[in-house]
Length: 175
Image (cartoon, rainbow, N blue to C red; front, side):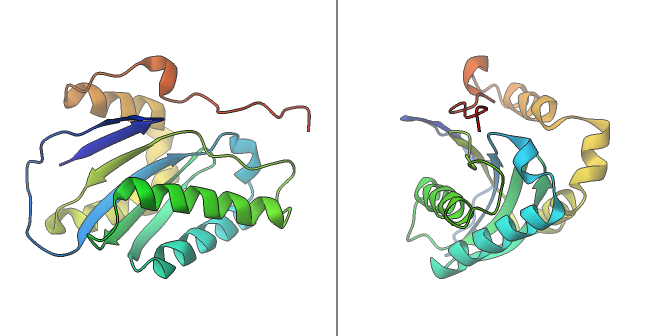
């Protein structure tokens, strides 16, 4: 498993336990929203997921599963090696927030938090990851995502600064 955490200019790379020479890598990403109230309606989430799917497809990758909770989204993507994961995440975030904000589909502005968590997924684990993404609501009744994420960081001995894990990028509560 490869874990990449990005925050601004900081990116950490960790050794993989299982690598395959296939031309397509499968990654699952955690992308946090800045304000979960903005995506609490199912129609808003569907609109966002549809836009993310379009961006990923247009860039030549294959979106295998998408889902999440009001405060984050998980995407499982079969990626071609022609683009860095951080570049794809940047394009997904900028394109989807521009789409939502330009069309005023939500009250106030939509923002993503900085950074993302990315994990490589072996072919044998795809089904398990798809089930995890599909069952987010049930899963997070038992454990918050923040708790689960911190647990992964500890499990793989990844140093992190708590101030940067789930921090908002701006404050537009005046809207």
